Image 1 (cartoon, rainbow, N blue to C red):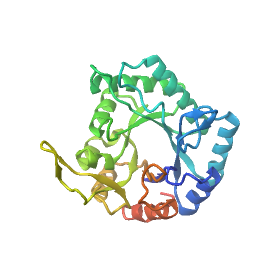
Image 2: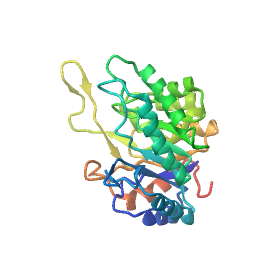
Image 3: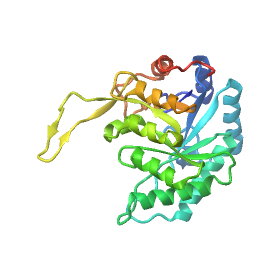
Image 4: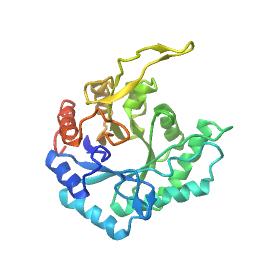
Length: 293
């Protein structure tokens, strides 16, 4: 396994600071955020956008290369996903995906994560995801070696739905960014899914979750509610040992990314990256990770 981390938990850090900290701690890679541009600059605490000039992209690439850090995945926030009220214009989707894929290519990045969205009214998840996979394949076809990945997420597609999408697409250019914490919230069998669909996992996006004690089991007359919140890794409900054992048994050698989301909008109770980044290194050593492996 190799380790990377998201940048959202440390919004004030520069690329040079990210690269230096990643190298000092022993990380193998970093996952950069490509957010929507305004006036040519990335919004929402992004590291770059599709309008970032080639000269800046080259400088970003050089910063990480000089530190020995791979840009492991480009996290794209492509219009907040596609779908919803009306049917997507799939030509427009391909064009949008392709613009992000070109940025990934210029950075030398092997994976690009596109957001999923939701099917239009009257459509189905199966049909929507099949078309989404086709759009992604078309978009990355111009960038040799680039793989499109999709993340299971609360409010969007489940892990099982994305694994089934990848299975039906049967194309190595489409895979899954597997988020076990979202499996917990969506009541999926985290380990069982990893055991069955390991070949489609292109990256594990790791964050732990615990049940919130307050208002536990609230009943509204039809449903009982359980709320979850992010927590330090190892303190929550994600079955990390069983998950990583299952992946190791199936030969998984890809990235495990620390998804550390702390900003003005959420994660206020979490410590910053200066605590989270070294803690994740120690956490992953328990599952066999060592620097340089």
